Length: 198
Image (cartoon, rainbow, N blue to C red; front, side, top):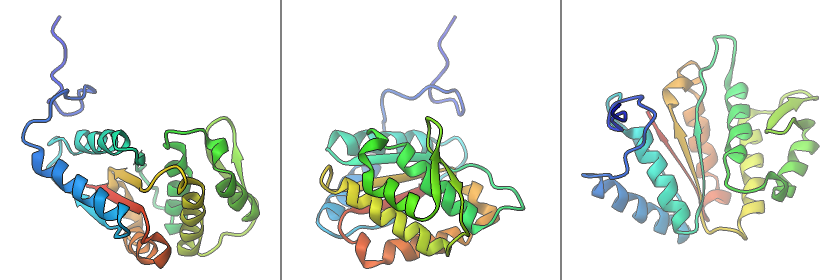
């Protein structure tokens, strides 16, 4: 029985060779170097369905980690009509640390910050349970990412966050402005970078 073709969309197989992606990988190298030198940025990877955007992001993560940068790649879940911007931010705050290639117990400042906001980490995974009123979503994301970076800055020069399937944010599209605002804040101009793909 022949193996599935890794270039078939949704095959579940990743291509072992990336032909014709030289420009994308050179672009990533440039962005990582700029972030290392204090100029963080965010970017989009655009293309038709099934063209290989997810595979490219996985390769971006592999390349970044090979260079010693910590990376988190998350798949944005679908949001219901009843969910709002705060739900989208909580999704990011839950999933970004859970996809880091390190023990969550190393994130002492981050976990302490979450606890101080009245949020508990549940179970063996990383799931938030809120015990207090919600705060402004932009402030919440800014604080959480700042404290996460405080935990990671001695481990890496750059934190690369890759968001896959961002079309799932359609019901809460204001998240893109919020992310832009958070990334424009002065704390992030020293080694954090977020990219997303549609």
